[in-house]
Structure formats: C-alpha cells, structure tokens
Length: 376
Ligand code: FE2
Image 1 (cartoon, rainbow, N blue to C red):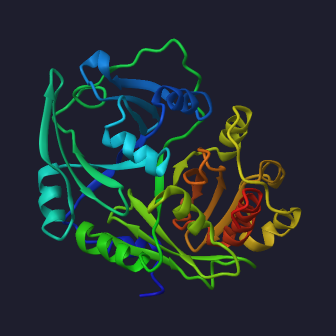
Image 2 (spheres, protein in one colour; image 1 turned 90 degrees about the vertical axis):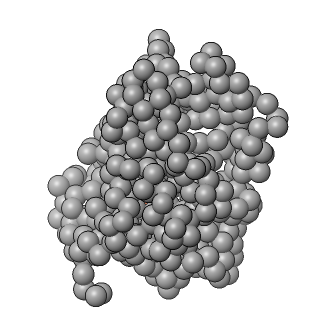
C-alpha cells in the first residue's frame, strides 16, 4: 500500500460521487465591491457576472470574477440581519462555499446525505432564458459548505439570476489557470474525523499524510492529511494543530477565524516566474524567501530542473520533488487583516504531492510573520 504513488492511490476512491472539478469558490466579505476590485487589480481576475439590487436581489450583492477555469464569487450582505453579515462578523472575510461541478446535483445530494452529509440546500432547479441549473448543498468543516452544481442544460454566463458584468476597468490576467487544491484547518482532534467524513460521505481517498514529526519547526507543529476524489480534480488537504513550544500557525488561524475554515486556495500557473513577478508588481504580498542556503542546496535536494535558479531565488519560489516529478510553489501572506486565508501559486512538473520538502522553510517563514503579529 505505502509504495503506491499519489496517482495510483487516487484510483482507489469510490465512484458514487463523480466530480468534474471546482465550479466556483464563494467568499462572504464585508465589502464585495472593494474585494472584487482587489482581485481584479492584484490577481488579474476578469469581471464576469453580478447579482444585487439591480437584478432584483434585495439582501446581498455578488460579484463573479473569472481567470482561466477559476471562478470567484464575492458576496456581501446589504443589511445587518443577513446571515452573511453574521458570518462576516464572526469569521471576517473568508470562504463560505467550495462549489463542485457534478453531472447530477440531485443524485449527489442523495448519495452524500444518505451517508451522513448534513443538509445545507435541498435539491433545487433554477432557470432563466439560458436554461436550467440544478444545485444542492451539504455542510463540511466549520460553517463551510459544498454546493453541487449541475449545469449541463445551461449556457448562460454563470447562474440564473446573474447578469453580465460589463466593466471599463479590465486589468490583464496573471496566468492563473485552475484551482489545484483547497486546504481546510480543523480543530484539535478533528483531522481524522474530517478525513473519515470525506471518505464516507464523499467517497474520497486519503492520498498523503504528514504527522507532527514531519511538519515541525523549533516552535510549532501541525498534522495534515490530503483527501482526493477519484480523478484528482478535487483535492482537499486537512490540517490540525499539534503541540509545540509555541502556538501553531493552525491555532492562530482557528483563533482569528473563530472556527474551522479554508486556510488556503492553491491556484495553478504554467509559468510561475512570470505569474509571481506580475503578482508582486501588482502589490500581492508573499512570504519572505527562505535563506540563500535553500537555493545553494537546491540541485542536491531536487535534482535537475528546467528553470534557472536565480529568478526562483529572487522571487522566493520554492521547489520540491516526489517520485512522479517536481513542483514549484510560493505562498502569499494572508489577504485579510485577520491572519486567516492566503493563496498558494503552484506550477506542477509531474509531481502530484504538495511540497513536503518545503514545509520546514515555509513554516519558519510563517512563524516570522506570526511573531510580528504577536501571535507566536
Ligand atoms: Fe497547498
């Protein structure tokens, strides 16, 4: 068993819930208009669709942005009694919905709720002049939701109820292509039950595990298990804090998000040097580069790679290898004032893993930021 590669392990997933990929990621935020501007300006997302008072929606406004296959929805409440306002009050800006593209949203609901999934949205069909979308939804960790979206009979822009968002401010994209994985942080003792939930309710398979002996620094530790669906299009690593001399970064997240939730969204590019250079020029803040020794030792550690090492060093891009290839990755600082959600930019050159060889350098960098915030 342990000698199987990640790709081989994925084939062991159960097939009762076929998923074609991530459909959209919806954030609940304090000010969707300004958040949308940030994701356009800094990350190069493009204006796609809008719903709000002008489209007959009275209690919220939602801006839909697209880049490659990535769709972000930024939603804000229009009154204090809205559950969206309550969510933002408790958690700050954060991810509410990880929506999954399925062939049959009604069947997805049946299969998952009959296996213990907690109902968020009963199966629903919504229509407009472009056809129909069928949706349903269940809760996952914390207050986070999986919505199942079936859109095979729909040819509109996004979902019924949304109109095209025409903007005369259209910064160019930064080469982001698709969602590679989305990581959840859960509380003490909650990693294994959450892993089992993904196995039992969603038919996912555990493709990688890291314990606190592998992921630790002088001060703190965490544990992580990566869950994947069968085709590998949807991967959800789950982190839990572990005891260390000081406060784990996962604990800091749980304290400031005031609960479990999405820690980071990894987005893929096929030219990480170009993408990261552009993101930096637009003001996206990344964690500090590891010490020079990391780059001096790189060829010994990961073998020969296609890229020149100098620009990787200059930008602070990390490299790791597994038995199937290598990957390049870099992490932003949190994109809110609460130290909660951040982004990862990743370029895969065959590797199907998540950069375990970088964990130590990465976490030491995160801890330097935690210390600046007085939270270590
Ligand atoms: Fe990641």
